[in-house]
Amino acid sequence: MHRTKTLVFRYNNRLAKNALIRFRHCGQEAQIHTSRIWNWKTPKRNPKLNSFLWCLFSQIQFTVMVSTSKIKSVDFYRKIPRDLTEASLSGAGLSIIAALAMMFLFGMELHNYLSISTSTSIIVDRSPDEDYLRIDFNISFPALSCEFASVDVSDVLGTNRLNITKTVRKYSINKHLKTTGSEFDSGPVTHRIKHDEENDEEYGEGSVTLNADNFDRISHQHAISVVNFYAPWCYWSNRLKPAWEKAAKIIRERHDPEVDGRIIMGKVDCTEEVDLCRSHHIQGYPSIRIFRKGSDVRDEHGHHEHESYYGDRDTDSLVKTMEELVAPIALDSPNLSLEDKSSTTTENAKRPAPREAGCRIEGFVRVKKVPGNLVISARSGAHSFDSALMNMSHVISDFSFGKKITPRVMSDIKRILPYVGASHAKLNGKSYLTDPDDHANVTVEHYIQLVKTEVMRSSHQLIEDYEFTAHSSLTHALSIPVVKFHYEPSPMQVLITENPKSFSHFITNVCAIIGGVFTVAGILDSILHNTIRMVKKVELGKNF
Image (cartoon, rainbow, N blue to C red; front, top):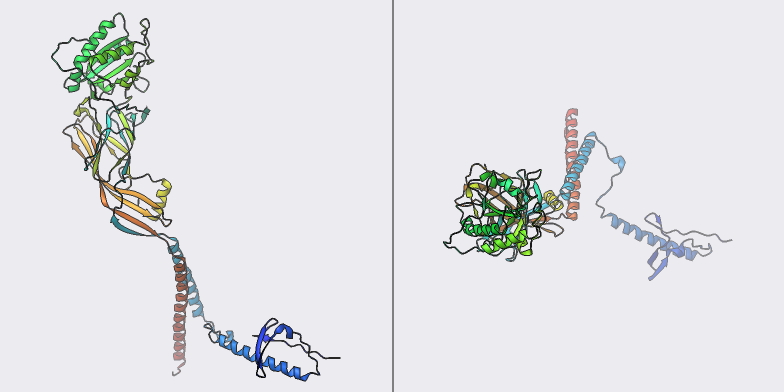
């Protein structure tokens, strides 16, 4: 019966069952896998083999011990046995303070990492020459009729665009700034209005003189009443007068008001019948209105339903228009003329008259990035205006430059820079009202200086905004009062860049906080501990 011995190889106090061991024995190199000597059975009668194996494992154990001691020599954190350390009340207090300091500084560092930092620089405006500046506006004029309201643009380069209609919309409003109907139709751009040649030919009075006393009575007696609201001092009224009287005389002869009763042509002197002209929202002279029986009565809000004539003003054109207005109405039923069945020519020459004296103008224009003016005024190539009766009071609901920024994007910008956008719409909500009875010919001028601001997000999203300052003044106009916005773009722009935070920098700062607080607390603890020991020694009377 053979006795067996189990050979166990231990490395760093751990069993090694799978290890390849290289060794030199008897001047020769050899290797053996521990799995082959694990549970190696050696017969007792083989002393040579036993001696060899014990010699082998002695060499292996020595080699492993040398390697382990070398690794331990680089240990920066050598341990002191727990029974050799001593806890103190001062050390516990400093430890609590150090822990709280670490937590506080970590929170501050985390807040700084999560916050957004920006850098601001001033550079020359990089906009290309073909880049235009967009101006959005929404302005209400309680006393300016949409019939003559015009939006004009000019600049220092000589650009002069009058009565822009493509990107501008107009709505009649009442004195409370409430819209009273659909969009006002400005109509197509008409050609130059034709008049009779100026001569000294005599003409009779063919039209009926109307006033506040007989206006409603006479207009109700005829299916169609065509009225010329004029002013004796007006050049265009005087140019129209001969043709108007001639046409009225011809129509009276063809359609006798006493017999026919379908149409009548009248006239109103607005210098004498001021209230009557104002009730029909007459602001330019001459204004030709077409009243149809049944539609010339005011509704519950005081609105009139009638039309304005903008066609040629020579005798032939006026007579032709009157005939086209009368043609759809049967001679035996002149009591109703609500339907308009006039020809295309007449339809192009007339449009619905303004329902109210006020107008809301909204839209946008594109201008070059040079100093210029945006002017809103009463304008017409064939009408005159009484500057004493023009009131350019207005309320600005919106006036801004550049592309519209969505509320979500604007809130994101304000989260980065709270002060951005504060001057984006500085004029919004402001009112500039003058007393309509003052007759002071007041022109309102707004002087605007704007600066382009670009915000570069960390996601490489570029957001453009225009900040501006505005100063307004009211001056006495020598001619027709206007509202003028004088804008002056700056050649410089503000560039705001969002700077992303580095996570590695955050980790480095956290480690510095922990290590720094721990070290400082250790130094303080050492100083405090030594000071207490010295005090105790002095109290005990020891010499040191």
